[in-house]
Image (cartoon, rainbow, N blue to C red; front, side, top):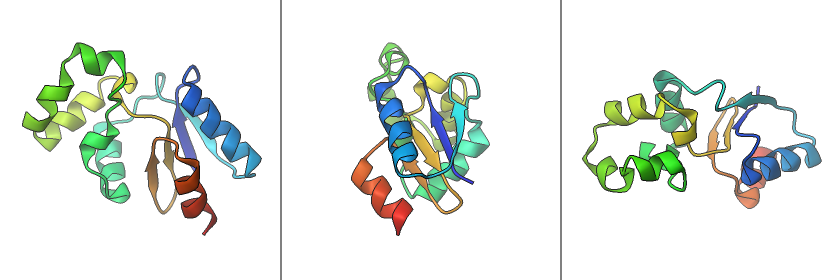
Length: 118
């Protein structure tokens, strides 16, 4: 099953959803603000994606800036980062596309096409 974790008011999420529809890729939509990922989900997704947990932070978001995370993340342990990400979906980079095989963070059509169509 493929799950698109997104925020409806995010233009990048809207583009990602349209792209999935245009490619006729079936997915389940999960609103990140209403169903924030848990720390366990985030840990699993980070491991599966092969990306550092820092890449799961929405660095352009208001909360990221408000909390001064640019300077704090490098000092945080993994568990601290997971707990923080799990507190508010607006801290999480979006869209997230979770498939049976991989996790894609952010929308890059070329990357998504390569991974989802191969």
